[in-house]
Length: 329
Image 1 (spheres, one colour):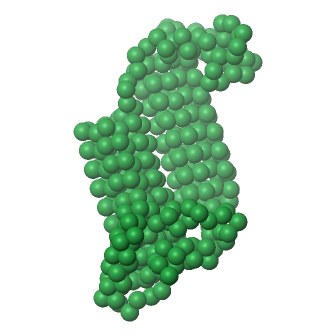
Image 2 (cartoon, one colour):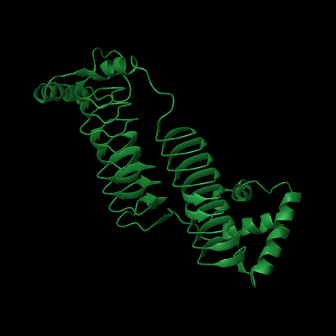
Image 3 (spheres, helix red, strand yellow):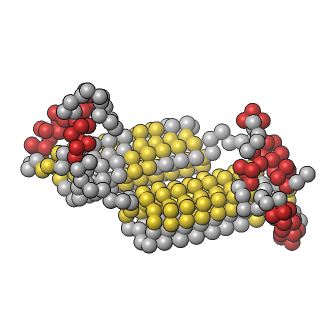
């Protein structure tokens, strides 16, 4: 049998995590989460506390129904935003406090239905109210109208002079930046913060010298990765954390010099392995006598895969692409 056949058999034989996660507390209904506490139905999130229905978010507290919300508290229905406090229905924003229905705003507080504002306070539909009292009086009426209309994200057909209609008029009347970037240098990226020399990267923070990475956090010198946290010299990996020089892997944590791995924790120099913890010099879950035997066998397998035209492809996908879902353990 070829290596790919052996690897496919190992993948099918080994039990699968129904919801991979690590160091979570009272957060049973979460998946691909790390350091999450007292949260429910959150996915691909880290360092959450008391959050519900969140996706791809990090370091949030008391947030709900959000996607890509970072370092925020008391945020509801927010998206693609960072450092939000007590904000609802806001997106593409940074550093907002007590804002409602705002888009592409920075360092603003107590704003309603605004777009494209910077360092403003007590504004409604991009117009200043003059005082806190006038602002609160206007917003009380508009909030009630907004919830009575029951529309969010689009203008209801036949509904005239609605809150969403006024908001759309505002946001379509102001210029918008091409890319959502904060503190990025020499980079072609979108929805990124603190990234340097990155190309075609998205939803990432504090990355350097990366290409084609989505959901990267504190990573360097990596290519073609998805949800890469603190990874260096990685290629074609997904949902990994604290890894170095790893290729073609899924759910690797604290690993080094591993290739073609599925659900590995604190492993080093493992090739084609599944569900291993604290292992070293393993191939297809079998231990080698030492580094000499390991590298010899690994090089033979790589040569075989090169001859088959498979080396460089994601072998987890190649092994399972023709497998029926019912065949998975």
